Image 1 (cartoon, one colour):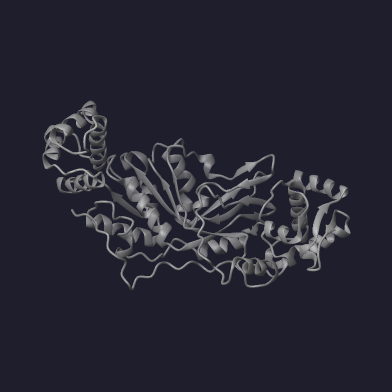
Image 2: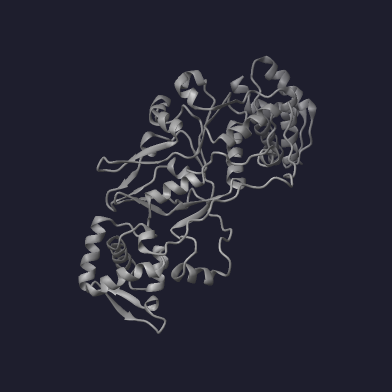
Length: 450
């Protein structure tokens, strides 16, 4: 047994490069959207936000102005919009508003679909980008992996089992008794993916067979502010609006997502969420983890049974694609491109059958710590809390509890020492550790479970 140590990343190690950014469309055909679809988005946008300058309208829809220029002219010819003013720069500076007839057309468009925001990308473009930024085959070396695991005390063989699991991109099953760091390990894997896995791109939304599905979720996705274009922000805006070669702003550059779910998970969360009033969809929670990590914590305690989850995911885990179903009943195929981590303190044999375990490529057992590992964890927590290490305090919990049948837990170190800290503060004493304080703390924390 040994503790992992934090070492500088080797000079020869390169972080995973980010995939090539989607290029801004130069024509309407390249955008994957029809003139009528863009026209309806323009009507809904002006209806909801009021009169808008052409430049601002293009920015809001995340489309170059030259692509919305033709639909704007069409709507003007159809007497749906009017020009309230502008300057000599041209149509990009015109201020557009709805006519009375245009307002009626906008209400009709809102009844069909009330989505307002960045224009969606075609499903085909989303699928292609997903496979460009696959989790399979990411670079992962011990020197880099030790950084997010530096706060954990692990056996070396256990640590060395994690890297190949990340590189494979296949699912991981982490199991063992409670309180020994399963969730901490899973989150450390997520931190590695989040910080060293390179940035990826997700669309605000995509369109499949006329159905809009939103993907980017600011509550789950962390944007990567690393510049992708040269020049200042104003120049970048001009390029996006008028020129070619810029990044398609319908896409958001994010860190590889790490999405955690626990006992609240149920099967409806794995399907499209339909907004019946607005007539568009929100992608399911695991779908938003594409390109990153989806952690199912406390597996076996979900609102759905392990068998139900197995039946839902047995093919996606094998084939790396899933199917989403819209309200009409039509299905379309989407990537299932993520590192799935199952973490449980229940006996795996009581949860899943051999068919399911076969599809989970990597199994990592997190067992109770040995005395050597326990001492190292205990000493680390003492240092973190600014407390002296007292070996007699550790001797006591072994003599009183662990040697009498209670299995030691790595989390006991933190819980016991934080209890000692609270006792000291309550008594207005300097925070310190003694055998007597450990007797008092353990009586409060452990005795009822002895």
